[in-house]
Length: 188
Picture 1 (cartoon, rainbow, N blue to C red):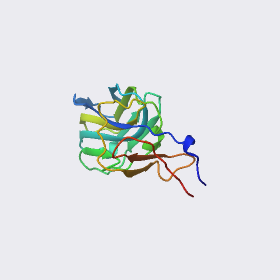
Picture 2 (cartoon, one colour):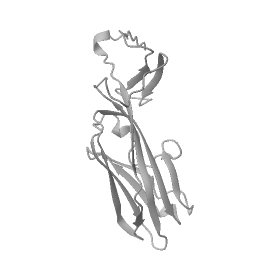
Picture 3 (spheres, rainbow, N blue to C red):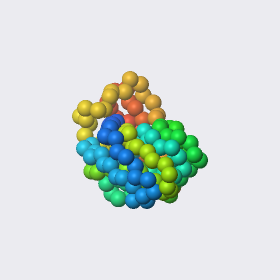
Picture 4 (tube, rainbow, N blue to C red):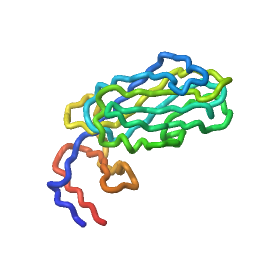
């Protein structure tokens, strides 16, 4: 199937990074856990997200880590997995696989501005820890072509689509070497 050019809209994608570096103790055996928030000031629809954490803990299989978007969408990033391994340091989806329920793809297309909240909870006695820091790296689809975070592309290339696989929609990203009209043909 060929889609007419007027059904596609090209928008710049800007990368935004946010970090909370204030350490907080994780209460032992408290399923309520601790919340920390990052206020995202970027405006636009989410194209992709990376969530980084630095959590010191003696037994990460006692922990749940849940991220909630400003729209109220919760995704359980870490759900009491990992055995008695020490510490949870890395990022989703680069280092860790999202345990669920939920997926980082659940956020795609949501408005990014507002409060993003990370909850870390310990569900068993005997191990304490600290949430040292956490952060978000977001690629945001913006309608403002003058966004200062947008770096001019040096080459014309297709970056890819997200989510992939998809049903019923996906966002196709590409870079242009210079501004100008674009024709994009998609074939099934």
